[in-house]
Image (cartoon, rainbow, N blue to C red; front, side, top):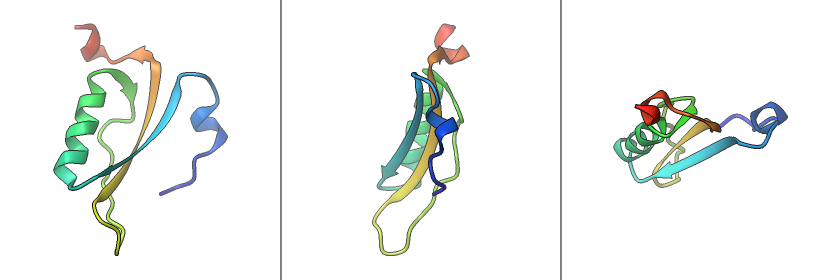
Length: 72
């Protein structure tokens, strides 16, 4: 995964969430649920690391802003 830089967390309320899950479906389900709550980068690609169990994904979120779905 790419390095987290200062822009990703430059203000209070900005988050970088590294997700580790048993499988791709679980990671995607979590990312879909997060989309319902906060403005974020959406469902991102899932990666596998050889020799490491599970899958990984990264989501960038702004918890100061609610998702349009959360307002409905």
